[in-house]
Length: 137
Image (tube, rainbow, N blue to C red; front, side):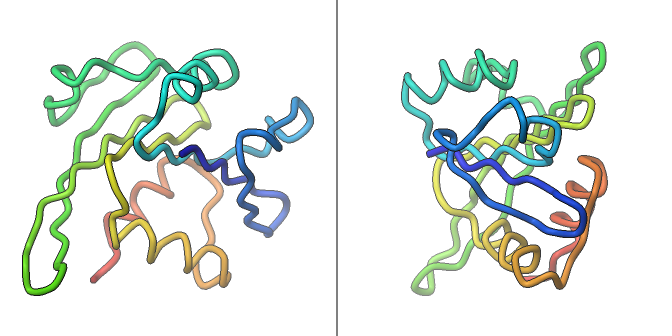
């Protein structure tokens, strides 16, 4: 699943990849990717310029390469009295912010809801990353 989040003025919009156009490309702030299939991986490479890294390289905590930063962060999630560790791969390049994950992560879902309810406002990829990490669950 791929969700694209745009900032237009002070409005935060969620669109699917099928609604993505060259007109709204400039407003992209965040591309959230959960369990991508081959078609979605191809779309990410062709439209966004993001190639999903090999699983082995996603184990590294922090990688700086040219004009991009990749960070692998672990989040704790409590589900039915079981604690699990959910890994999220963050990729920041220029103005794009991409998250890659295997399942829903409560912290990300809470942050998306805050943005939709306008309780949080971000304009840059770096501030988006900082806001996500500052959420108290």
